[in-house]
Amino acid sequence: MDSSLLLLPIVGFVDHRDERMIRTTDAVREDLGEAGLLRRYAPTDDGLPGKEGVFLAASFWLAECLARQGRLEEAHKVFKRALSTGNDLQLFAEEYDPETNEMLGNFPQGLTHLSLIAAIVAFKDMENAE
Image (cartoon, rainbow, N blue to C red; front, side, top):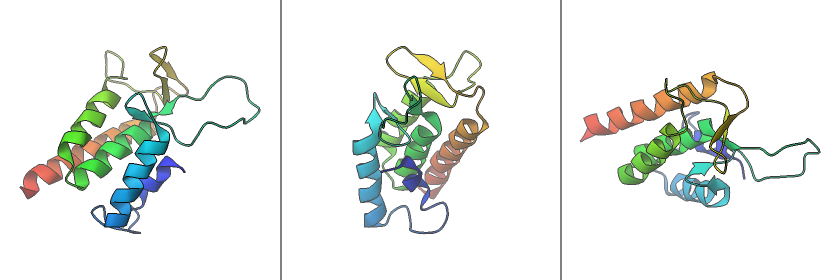
C-alpha cells in the first residue's frame, strides 16, 4: 500500500467518485493512517537510522480525495489536522512526527505546499458545484 494511490484520479486513471477509488481511499487511510495524518507507505526496515514520519503531502492528498468524493466533513477534518503541522508562518516540512510534534525531512517542502493548494482548490470546486 502506498499513499500515491490517492493520485490515481489526478492522472486520469479513475474518477474520484468511482466506487473503486472510494474503496482505495478508505484502504489507504486504514492502512497508512496515523494520528489523523498519512504515512507514505507502511513502516519497513530500510536499514537507515531513525524513524520515518507521516508524509504531509499524502495527508493533503487524502483531504483532496475526500473533498472530491463529496465527503466534505471528513475532508475538512483531515485538512485541519494536516494544517496544524505547519509552523507560525504556515510553512510545512516533508514529514512530521505526531509523537513529538516535530517537523522532519526537507523544510520547507514544495510538494507539501502544492498538495495543500490542490486540497484548497478541491474544496472551492466542491463549493462551486453546490
